Structures are given as structure tokens and as C-alpha cells.
Length: 302
Ligand SMILES: [Zn+2]
Image (cartoon, rainbow, N blue to C red; front, side):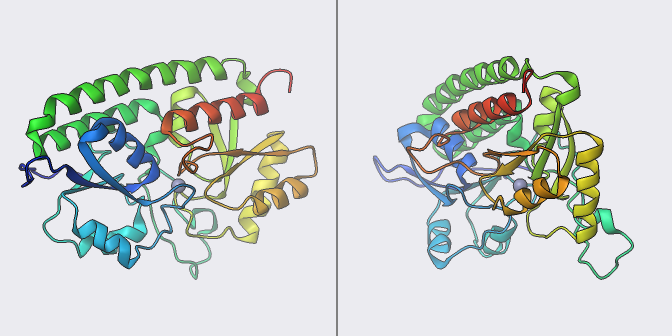
């Protein structure tokens, strides 16, 4: 995953860079850095699942007219990959270049004996944004790319990135503070898919299970996997599990009912922001809300 060599875009007097971001969270960070100097189009919008998204003809038109396309990389936007392959001449910048990548669960891992399942392997966990320090790296990469493409505005991009990075540092500290009330024994996360690895590593949690035991959402759990997860929930005395805004909570309700004890299903923003004007319409707000929900669910006194 490398950032390509970038040369200045040919812009008419007063023309702004045409920038595409693959999904809502990258889009927010690109907008923070680009400010009013860029025209931004976001392909995979609020509440949409980047793992399973398929590009439309309108997306292809936007991609073809762009000066640069920012993606998360690490195979997060699987459905866009084919479309991106067909775009010639537009640089594609993976904002996660330089982030240290954690290993993720492989789909089919829990059922190795069954060779009939499609054992897609995704060993690199793409959900790097769940640690704000990684988004600081995104801001550096975005500022460097925009500056190379549009040197006349390089100072503005750099200043915007630095202001945003200060905000990210405050976010990181405030998340730690929010989570501080959660006792060690309750620092266990169960989610729909394996999206909280970076968050767990950063803030001292353990991901003890996911309904879809994979870093993608494009598969269904087997009956055996669900039964094993119910056992884990009972053994670990889990009382809170977390649904995600990019997937239906139905299966978690089933899981909670099967576990039998008083398991409550909470909701988190994981792989997408909410619609503009709603509570989690920026990365900083999304992370702040998630920390508050997790603290309310797992904190002392619950
Ligand atoms: Zn995901």
C-alpha cells in the first residue's frame, strides 16, 4: 500500500481540485484537510456498508472526472476495487499508508473442517480509523497528496491538517477519560463483525467475539459459529453486545435471546457516519458517541 507519485493537476484559474473519497469517514477527514479549496464527492455515503458496496454508473462518472481518489485501502472497499481498476490516469491514494496494520480474523476460520465454505482470507484488518492516532496519519497523507496536486494551496492544506490533528489529540484524550470508569473485568467487546480491533488495542479492551467472525461483512455466521458465540457470552458473563449502524441488529437480538441472561444490545457507529445533521455526522462525533455508549453499557454500576 503506497502513495503514488503525484504531480500538479491542470487547474484553470480559480478552479478547485476535483476530489473523490471512497466512503464517509475518509470523506470527512478529506474535507477537514481540503476545506473550501476542494470539490469533494463521497461515493459510499452515510450508513452504507463499504465492504459490500457496489459502484453505480454515476459513481464511475464521478471517479472518471476526479483529479485524485482517496481510499482507505486494505481491501475495505472491496466492491469499489473492480471499478477503480477501470479508471485510468487518476491517482488513487490509500490514506492508511504508513499505519501499522493489525491482523484480522479470516472468514471461515471457526469452521475449518467445512471445505465447502468460501474461505476468503482477509488477514489485514482495514478498520484503522477506530484508533484516532491512525487518523492523524490519514491527515498527513491527505495534506501531502493535496499539496502535491495543488501546490498553490499547500500552506492552507498543511494548516488545516495541523488544526484537525490537534482536535484528534483532544478526541483521543477524551475517549480515554470517558472509558476510564469501566473495570478491567468488563472490558470485553462483542460486535456484529470484527471492526473494533484497533479500538480495543488502543483503549485496553478485548474483542471476545463477533457474530460475523471476520473483518468483512460479506458472509453469514454458521449455526456452529453462533452456538459457539452464545457459549462464549455465557462463559464470559457478557451483559452488553454492540450492533452497528452499517448492519441490521436482528441477529444480535437473536443472540441476546439465546444467551438467556440479561444481555442488552447497544448500537455503535462503526464503518460509516450518520446522515449530515444527525448525531454522528463527523468522525470526531462518531467516536465520541461510541465511547459514551460503551461507557454507559460497561461502566461501573451497570
Ligand atoms: Zn467493517
